[in-house]
Picture 1: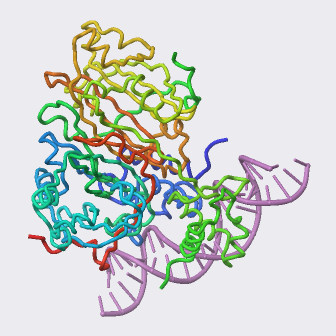
Picture 2: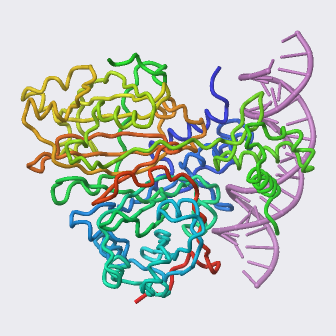
Picture 3: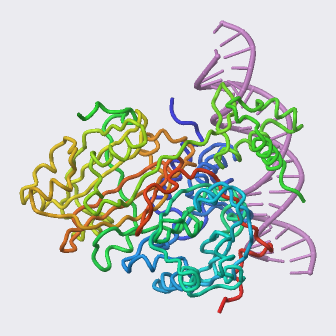
Length: 285
Length: 285
DNA sequence: GCAAATTTGTTCGTATGTATT
DNA sequence: CAATACATACGAACAAATTTG
């Protein structure tokens, strides 16, 4: 048969929203009004609204009403740089220039320093045995006073023992730990590898990014492992960003100066001919 | 006061799941059993289960029960290549080698060819006026008979007019359109830029990837704009992947042969000292 | 500052439909 | 066909947040 009633209502509301309803920030009809409009019970229209909520179309505010979610102008984060490998750090300086280019005001918290025992991805990325001590430097980043990203870098404790005691200082290093390690220990970063995943936020991230309580907004997790000239991993940096207001750009090879850096907008889905397009096709060769 | 009842139940269930409940694939207690266990109504335990569903913890199957979601071994997709810029195509050949390295069997559908009018990101990425004709080649990709990705590439119609009529043939080009365009028109790809976003799936994607109906699984969208030696855009390729079973790897600079390519696992969230960590810190400098 | 009105949030009860075994 | 288990839908009452008078 047809869709259940709550989904029919949700579809109808979605269609009305797409043609402008509530786009100006005004609330949708109240639940009681919708109940009368659709001749359904209040619980059923609430199910319809809930369907729209989990899809990120609307949000509800107690005592106020239901509102269409305004899409956020995405913030663009480069993962690669024209200017050689040296620039690819996560220093406050490079963070600032990336952010300020876009007319926003960056802030960085002083780092929280911890000595931890490596395990899991930290141990495997740094190629250390489980239980080896590592230095963890954790920072919170803001853009225009709103939370931007959470970042934790891990370094082998042996760096400190060899003299890089600055890694233990709970002060921001504007010039970056990359150049610091090169100055003090002669360790030069010659490349890195990023692993990009999306997952549900943990509680720390939900609180920090002020994400909606219902966990429908995911976070990007970027795991960056940096290597020195001998091919040894020198650092693991894990950075998380809210997925609803960030996008990443990777440039490979030769690309003109300022390509379409602000490509906001949806693409229209391609036409899918049959209803069985989710089944494998005949093998093409 | 405390949390509402349904959330208390959800938290309790989540804690039990974390200590092993239902991890072996066996169903959780039925709704009626949970109603008795917690002394709440069936609707309330259903609210608790719904809370777990939107967080991707469990799924329900009518007539069977509630099951803990098994996490999928992620599939790793490289966005950059050691072997120079030439390799960075989206040809079937490169798709196959990337996939087969991981002991899986790739399949590619024959492309669906369309002539469209450029608009939105297609027009801006290819730097064409709105309404210019473009060739669209759409393919569906599978891994071991399960849906892997949806891909649509857009080329300026002028390429066809200059002789690259192969773009209009609805047959897969195993060697890739990149080398085809170089052979026929002498257009050489020298670089590209990827833009990585996540968003809710549209209906086409939900059906093709067999994503759960409630839209809690997002999709990656990779917009790749490729450029020739003159800095002119020659192609826009949009590829989407389910976000729950894919991750992307970007390598910049010099990185040893086979770094930790299979770093599955969670990272422990860093300690956040105060409860106001979501507020901006004092300016560091 | 308080009280009333409005609006969404939570919780119960009940009945019936649909999918699976 | 019957039993089981989740899905949908209705009605009702009270709680909590917000705005308004």
